[in-house]
Structures are given as structure tokens and as C-alpha cells.
Amino acid sequence: MKSTDQPPSPSQFEDLRQRLFEEIFQARLRVYAIGQPSPMERLELPGVNAEIWLKREDLSPIHAYKWRGAFNRMAKMSEEERARGVICASAGNHAQGVALAASHLGIDAEIVMPVSTPRMKQVAVERHGGDRARITLHGDNFDEALAEALRRCEAEGRVFIHPYDDLAIMGGQGTLADEVVMSGRGPFDVAYLQIGGGGLAAGVACWLRAHWPSIRLVGVEGVDQASMAAAVRVGKPVRLDDLDIFCDGTAVRRAGDLTTPLCAGLLDEFITVTNDEVCAAIQTLWEHCRLVPEPSGAMGLAGLLQGAERLSGERALVLVCGANMDFGRLAWIARHAGIGAHRRRYYRVGMDERRGSLIEFLEAHLEGINIIEFQYGKTDTERAWFTLGLEATPPAFELLERRFREHGVPWEEVTGQADAEFRVIRFIPALFHLPIFIRHEFPERPGALHDFLVPAAQMASICYFNYIFTGEEVGRALIGFEFESEEQRARFTAWLDTSGMRHSQIQPGALARIVRGD
Image 1 (cartoon, rainbow, N blue to C red):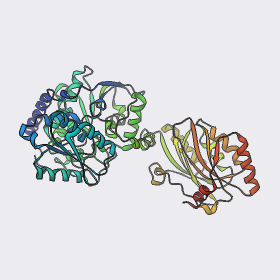
Image 2 (cartoon, helix red, strand yellow):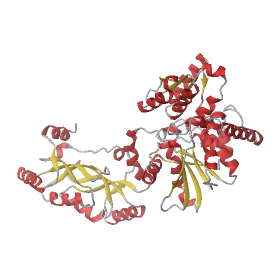
Image 3 (cartoon, one colour):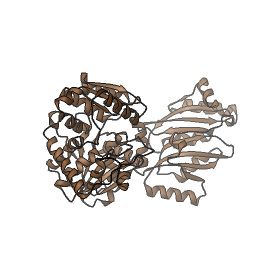
């Protein structure tokens, strides 16, 4: 089916669905040559009226479901095709699946990956593929790697292993649905299926619908990567101009020619989730299961949480489809999880630029609210602007904002704005008078930092403040104080040295760089 064709007729869709069903049935005889069924795990969430079960594909041979489709497709190849070898394009899990299949089946595999592919993923491909898989790095993104793989496929006569738009690939992915049916945990009332190109969703939906006709099948896509929903709306695949790649496992610019009619006919609805909601789902899986999935692996749960109020005692299935994530992404995820769960907001607040105004503000407005970030730099002699990251419940935020309005406090919510997102702290060094910068450590408990600032404010004014909660028992802040005279500065330094509080003063060279804004 070409992308310019008309949508399939009901009889054509039924023929396609039946062919996919047969592929899944036959795939059950192949995929378990290299892997065992992945487990089901119960997820109990306070406040969610549903019986939730996770399908733990993160515990499969490559820590993702992609090995199923790759092995099923390659196991079907003729001897002539095997002799020609295979080629694929992938930035991650599909590459590992092809490499694993190549090693077990004795087929030479060329795997084209973008130059930006993290070394961790390259090492995984090398480990699974052994001497059967060779990596070529090409292009800055998946599209450029795909174009190179297709060029080489034509030039070298290799068999192209598509990541999703192949009935044999979909059939392999559908075996995880067979495991769900055979697990005895069903029948399920609803299943949340993440969608990239649509291979996983089509295969799983086909098998679940055949066994539980009344199940509600929900396709979950990222807000800025919803290529399948776009294709279903117009009846054929369309190409997205802009593509968000945070959920890299589902970042597909164009849905498949085969997967589009299958998803259109099998899924009941399509929803989108934000990156922040995905981060919140990752945190939920960590807190309740000690599981850290890759972003696309948590999209199904993000979809469930988005509509949790609809689950009135239902039995729900969520796919944890992968856990191949670079360690360096955890900090970003942790910071955004609270936003996605609607318990973290950022505010820019104005107050008089005078000694003690910060303490007055904290005591008057933020009692009982957890401060997880604090950003401030002196930019004016009359007005101070602080950026606060706060954690609380939505009703507590509403009460805080009402309090601001009633007391005439200048404020705006800046959650997601660039300066808050990237922690840009503006300051004008020329306005600092006799400054001291210290690195202050304090017990990470309510009131500890306040107890330090109250006596400090009697001797100095704050000209710089940089704090972020890290989850440790000890909190750390870089604070700048300024003074009207050298005597005040000396008295403050003496107080610090005898206070017993853990701190270190920034050395003169480093201090100069900070004050200059280097």
C-alpha cells in the first residue's frame, strides 16, 4: 500500500488484520528460540481506582521489545536472502534486536546509526551482534541514517529490515500480547499502547482484540511526535515537519503504510502526553517498582495517569516497552517529573530590594510549601526579583496565588520559561558592595535554611542566591552577601567562623570571576 492510496475498504482492512493475526500465530514458534516470556507485574497506585498490570518488556533479552519483531522477520528469510545479509537503520533498540537476531541466525548485518548515537547504545549492538553485526555511523539524525541504509541496501543487494512497517515485524511484536493473554491476568478492560511507527501498537492490538473483543485500546503518542494520529485523521501517512525526540524510541516522523490502516481500524482512541507527563510516569515506576524505563517505555503509564479518573474499577494493561536510557538523562527527568505530576511550579516574585525583605516574604507566604529551587541575582537597587521552584498540591498553589494577589505581591508563573528551565540567574556585579560568596551546607529539612538566613540578614544583604534540591540529606547553596562597611563584613565573617555551620568562602580568584560574570 503506497502512501498516496485511498484508505482500505472494510474487506481490505479485514484481510490485512487476518494476515497480521496469522503472522503473530506463526511468530510464537520462532521468537522463543532466543528469549523467554517477559513477566507481568502489579502496580498499585494510591488514588487510582484500577487494577493496573505492567508488561515488563524491559526485562527481555535487549531490555526492550524490539528483539521480537527483528528475530521473527529474519528467521523467515530464505537461504538466498540470508546469504545476501541484512541492513537496517536505527538509533537504538531496533539495532540491538537486529544484532541479536543476526548473531543467533548466523546472518551478516550492517547497522546504520546516526553519528550522535551514544556510545552506550553502540556497545550494546556490538555485544549482542558479536562478529555478525557491523556499525556504520552516518548523518546527524535517524532520517539521514535511514537514507544511507536504503542507498546501501540497493547498492549491495542486502535485505532491509524495517523497524515497524512489515507484517513479520508486527507479528513478532504481537507475541508479547499472546503472553498477556496466556498470563491469566486478564481479561483487561483497557490497554495503553505507545506508538512510534505503529508496529508495536498494531501487533498487540490485533491479538488483544481477537481474544477480548470489548477491550478499549488507547494509542499513546508524544505531543510533538503524533504521526499516527495525523495519518489516521487524513486516511494516509503524512510527514511531520517538526519532531520532538525526547521520547526517542517513538520519535517517528511518518507512520507506516501498513501500520496506519491497522491502527486506524484496531485502536479506539489516540491521546498525546507531554514530556513532563512522561517524566512523572518514570518517577512513578521508580517509586513503586524500582524500575527506570526509557522515556518511550513510560508513555503508556503517562497515558493512563492522564485519564486515571476514567478508570472506575477497571483492569488496565500498560506496556513498559524498554529501558535503554542514557544515564545522563536522569537529572533532566527528575527535574521535570514534578511538573508533569502537577506538584511543581516556578514563580518569579518581586519585592523591595532591602535587607530582611526575603525573610519577611518567606515567613508571610511560603510556610508549609517546599522550596526546591531558589534563583536570585541583584539587578536593581530598588526592586528584587526572585525565581522560586516550589512543590505542593494544586490546591496549595491556588491558595498561594490568591495570597499573592491579596497582598499585592508582584508575581508571575514561569514554569517552562527558558530562564527558569535553564536556571539563568541574571545579576549586575557593579551593584554589589563589598560582597562575600559562600558555599553553605545545611540539613535538608524544613526550616534549616531559614534558621541560617534570619541571623545573617541582621548583618548583611543578599545579592546572589543559587540553590537546587538534589534529594540528599544535605542541602547546598551558593549565596552572595554584601555589606555597607568593612566592619560589617568582618563581623559577618567572624560570625560564620564561630557559628559551627558548614560553609566555605569562595576563593578570591573564583570570586572575581563570579563578580565579573565570567
